[in-house]
Length: 407
Image (cartoon, rainbow, N blue to C red; front, side, top):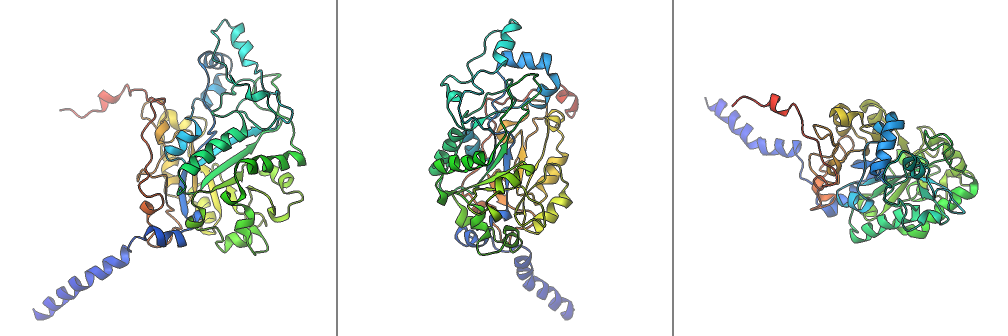
């Protein structure tokens, strides 16, 4: 009897220690900022973040003549500052070069809708920004040019203004897609010009004309004294959260564009963007994995690569409220999960598909590689994702009454 009583007492005495081991004390913000690295975060991003959708007559024309394309791009976003305010921490910008200006000032969709007898839509560029020289934001050539910001520099200025007003934010990842040649399905549309060495240099100059070097996390910062970027990444040379607050990081999406961007800049020396690499390449650090499964992603994350992936494509998951891939990715180590439908911009079809964290935060501890004691609440203290925007309404579910339990 005494032996049983002693054993029970010992179990009770040790219980707090066992609990402490299984549930370590959450780190304070000050302590966490020194140890949590940016590749140990997980954030939600938006795909084609600039896209404002189609105007009414454009929408009618697209669904009549390009129904498949229209179906795949039936989403739209709030402007960039509102997305950041809602908790998005990765934005995507698709850019074309226009060094003389005016190349994309008069999209054919205006005359096409007029020829169909449709009412005139609002001017997509009332301030004539497309007439100015510089990089432009384009979705579908001559069909969909409605963006939250027409000039690349305008987009960057919007992001920086928001950033300066929220200087303690987790780093914002900016995915840049260079567009060259074909821009969409319309025969005879104005194509994008090919990029040259000067184009890539101009891209860096435009970025640095808005963001000072000290506000950008660059490949040089991450490589440090290592021989290659990958060598530093494998040794977990990514900066800490404390070193990265209030900063941005640029990622080059198109993998085949990397050689041209790297020409004359070995190891990305002096460059602003991280290229889309693969393990074993000296420039590897950021690895795009649009359609990869969790095992492939986690293998990369455990080696300290930075992974961006997509939870939905061509509105398919949104239309069917299919959360299979979304849920898989949220449980994975993918640092950046991009969607057409973040929480504040749910899909308009029954079910209201969207992508966000259950903690309702802009960034959280990575499920795979976060350090012990990682405290999601200390990443952006007091900041939560916003509810759905009034510009994004969800259709009622016609089968809702049938699924209700009988009273």
